[in-house]
Length: 223
Image (cartoon, rainbow, N blue to C red; front, top):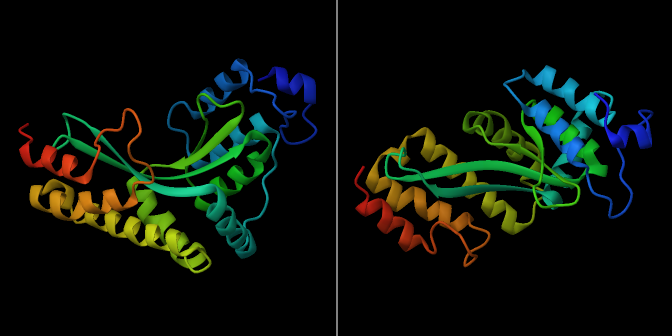
């Protein structure tokens, strides 16, 4: 698997781009390929290592502490909302953990991949060379991300992020309780937490302009 970047920079170390340089379409296609299918975590790590010229390293407690600080600045937990006719009340909520980084910092995203033992690394469409590490599987968020946050990330976080972490865990707990499948609980418990966690509003194309709009949609939805 040879890319233009590998020809130019060689395979002697981690992938690097010059300032303002863009990832080539060919490289982005290679990144798509390693994300294809359902590889095991170990297989996926080896794919990432080969593509970006990385080497595995031991994961220690210090590594996990360091990553918590990195997530404080470059990561976020969020819950998206979109209309989906196959969802019980026409609304699908998608909790996730995202960490963004320029491709030259791929080592940091790889560290997150190794620490959590899960996730995928993808190209951020529309950027020059930004990558996004993400975990979107709800069970993985509950079993791996929340325990990590509680042990390493919560205490040193700023007040705003602590509130988000609390709301995020509460929301995931509500999913485990299947509250999103009960109309009243969806309206009165789940959607208010989603609204609390919204980081942006009023932008073009958002699914619901307000909490009230989302609640009314669920209240009136007939499948």
